[in-house]
Length: 82
Image (cartoon, rainbow, N blue to C red):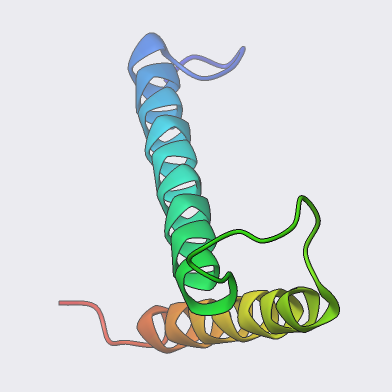
């Protein structure tokens, strides 16, 4: 192993992991956006701005989505390795 730092193979592995993490985060954001939009925004847009009810719904939806995502991540992180 090189004393000066990671090898090229290690760098490629780290880059691959970072790339997968970015794909996961983009997918998570897209699913969160679509889920909360479908749940909270009226199908026929009446105004250019969100109304108070839509704002509240989105706040709750995003909060719950993150809570559940974090909980699932914690539960999966505590699973025994196979």
